[in-house]
Image 1 (cartoon, rainbow, N blue to C red):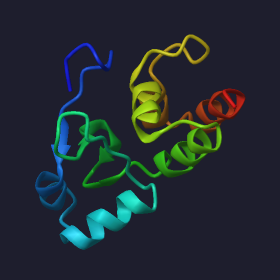
Image 2: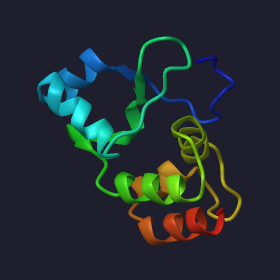
Image 3: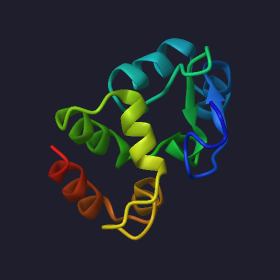
Length: 115
């Protein structure tokens, strides 16, 4: 992924890195992706997940419902990642920053309004 593709700078974790960070076997990491506890992109070949989506060795708890709301609004995984990492005027910061700050309801309200 190019540096300007996502406005918010973040480290990107590959599947092997996620196995290590989450301390889970590969099958469990894949299940977390399948069940939308995490969302990743293959834009540069290998599947990668923004490191901001992981907190204290686990997927950010509020991420799953937000990703589902974005999918319901018609977003692809790539579009959902871009929206989560980009500044959102109605929130005053990037949605992922708001989620990490505990502002789940506000972020999901904005995500549902995108449909």
